[in-house]
Amino acid sequence: MGRHSGSLIRTGSLLAMAVLLAACGASKDDPEFGGLQFRGGAKPVGDDRANFVVTISNAARAPYAAADAGIYEGTKYCIHYLGTSDIAWAVAPEAVRRQPMLSGSDLVLRGRCVE
Image (tube, one colour):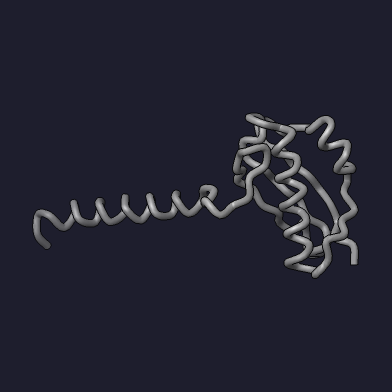
């Protein structure tokens, strides 16, 4: 291999990392809550997909808007996996909207999709 092969490999690796990081952020098509976009998502808890947890990153910058983003993510999750938008939240959405409880700078919500 030539002198420049190490440099090309490093450059290629950096480019690949930049593309992956860009994919992790909010896209221009993501919905806005209070004029802001939030990065977050929902995932199942255990083997039962009906139980889920939503995490909204950096919610501390606008906790009330982040609460709406979390409720949106939970609804999207239930529609995708179980075809329903009915959710039994661990804490009622109205209570979350009144006083979002943060874990560090993130908002964490738990719920169960109701069929």
